[in-house]
Every structure is written in structure tokens, then in C-alpha cells.
Length: 481
Image 1: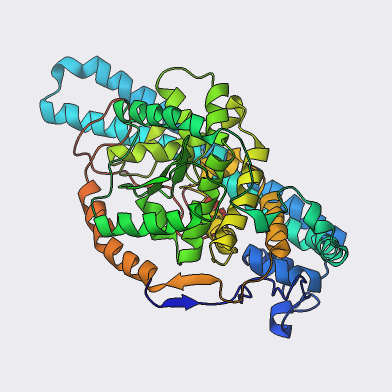
Image 2 (image 1 turned 90 degrees about the horizontal axis):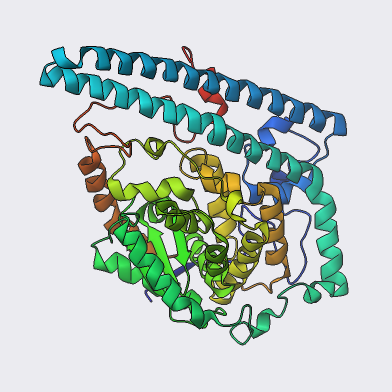
């Protein structure tokens, strides 16, 4: 590889690890001792910042309870507002469709197209409002409450981790034998999944559920190199096949038998190679533990949703909605008008906890900063998750539980002072990716949405979507909504 740009595991954002201990804090500015800012402002910080800060601050139980109550009221108000919008759009759709039916014989071609576009856009707006009410807004408040949990609960858990490190009991945890990675058996008979994975890919292609491959070979080669590095230092016992897909969704998913797919949007969202490595390691872990194979055996949904549900069950972000980008969905995923509740398929919280733990181990063993996955998770939950990742965040383990268990595993791993955070290869990949993404965005303009009935060339509707990076609560504060 080219010269690596490295930093130690002790990042400015995270708890400084020294040997096997977790110091309370590294500086007064980080500690921000004794509540120098209001509670609500702490919740705008990243999880890794909060893990460092939480042991240094103290808020009264009544204050935390008051904040939880405020969140619940704000969440209910915001959700109800967009539920009302859904009902309004339903009425508009009924009216427009009724008028179209009554005047169908009198309409010119251009008038009919205009009517179709009106119905299509109202349907899109209805789908967006529905996603905001059922998924995005609850996800945003789940994230805020999880950060409140860190403030309230992490100090005690932090002390417990220190005790486990001090008395050596941490080595008795599940898969605590990290020095034997590659020689362990996490789940037997991984090779039995290869045929199943090949069949799933064929079925997905026939059903048009798989976006096309990204044509830039150098980017494919780069991602494959990182993934193979991780796979070679994991417990994977089958060959790994890696493909980057031409899709703007922030997705990654593993199919049985070592078939790993990364969508272009995820490469755009990652800020350094350790974040990408954390995602790849998480997905490799699903195949190591044979999660996707087990989920397929338990699925009960027939037809096209069978394959879609299997994919959604193990996608990193975006869930079933992300699949639709094969059709160049212009308005995000709202045109699908659905978010499958994967709990119906028996999606296991334990599977995700397992993949989190193993993924951290594999990224660490491959020489990467193991906080990469946490930083990526936090970023998507805060900046992108309300829209592009809501399906995954709503059907997988809670934010707090995942963040704490991942942080716990990181604490138990021996520190590697030269852990990789960034590389010149990653930066070169991002430079190559920028014009590809810009071109794809230009080509998507005017393309149809994923509505069952579509009309080409419609002007997109005015959207209710929040501004990227802004708190989701601001959606409810906008005038006229």
C-alpha cells in the first residue's frame, strides 16, 4: 500500500485507551466538568464524545426524567402532525383520481399527463410523510434518548468495564479468544451457504432487485482489497466475493456464502478507511456466523418480497427501501411507500450484537482503528439515518445497547498504537468517486419513481424533507406544515 496516514486508537473523539484501562478523561475541555453546558446540548455530541464526557458530568434524575418527558411529547406531536398530512394526501388522491375517472374521455394527451403527474407527486409526498411519521421521526428521538442513556447509565457501566479489566474476567466473555481469530469456529459448515448465496443473487437479478455494478474498476479493486484484508484476518472459511453497486443509498449487505455488496452511497458517506473497514467487517461477520442463511430458512414471505426481505434483514443501512435504487429512484426511497417490519421474519437482535462484536474484532485484527464502525454508525444515525437508514435503525437493536456493547468490546482489545484510520488509497478512491456520483445525480433527474403506476418526465414535488444535517425536530417547526 501507499504511505498510510495513521493515528492511534486514542482519538480525540473517543475514550483514551491505555493498555487495558479506560481513564476518566484526558482534558478539562473534554470533560466539560459539572454540567458547564445544558443537558440538551450534550445530546448533540457524538457517542464517542459522550462516552468520554459522561463519567465527568452529573445531572439530577429529575432533570433527565424531564428531558425524556419533553422528548416523548415532542415525538408524539411531530408524528401526529405527519400522520395528519398522510390523511390529507389520501383525500387529495381520492379527489384527483375521481376527477380523472370522470373526465377521462375529455382529456387531451397533455392534460392526462398533467393529471398523472399530479397524482404521482401527491403519492410521493404521502409516502414521504408516512415514512417521516412511522420511521424517521421515531428514529431521531430514539437516537436522542439513547444519548440520554449514555449520560445517565454509562458511568456505572464504565466502572464495571474497568473492574472486568482489573480482575481479568473480561477474557471469559463470548468470543474472548481474540488471539485465536482465524482458528476459531464461530458457526460450522459455512461452505454449505455458497450455493444458497448464488441462487439468491440470481433470483434478485431476475426480480430487478440488484442495482448494476459500478463500472470504475479501480474503485472495485480498492474496496475488494480492504475487504480481503479483513476477511483474511477473520474467521471466514469461504472465499469472499465483493461487488460495489451503482446506487446512491448508504447500504452494504452480505448474502450467504461470502457474497458482499457495497453500494456507492456508503463509500460517499464514509470519511476514512477505518469507517469503511468497520462496515465491511460487520458484514463479513454476518457470513461468518451464517446469519443470512438462518434468516432465509425462517422467512415466510413469498414471491418478490422473499428475496427483498432477506436482503433487508442484513443490510447495514437503508433496509428494504434501499433496494429500489436499481430503478434510479429520484426522490430517495419514498416512492416505495413501504418499510417492511423485519421482526415479522424473526430478525434477531442477537444477530446484530454478534456481528457488532465480531466486526470490531476483525477490524482490529486487520490493523484498523476499531472505533471506525461506531463513528460511522453515529454519523448515519445523526446526519443520514432519519431518511436513508430508518428501516435498519427501526428494526435492529437499540442505539444505546449497540453503542455500549461495541465500546465495551473495544475496551477489551489490546491497543494497537499504529491502528489505521486513514490511507492515501481511500482518499484517491474518494476523488475518483466524486465525478461518478455527480454524473449519476445528473442522470437521475426526471427518471421515474418506484410507484406502481409511473409517469415519465414529471416535475418533482415540493418536499417536506428536513435539510441535511439539521435536527429532525426542525421538520415539525417549519411553517405551513
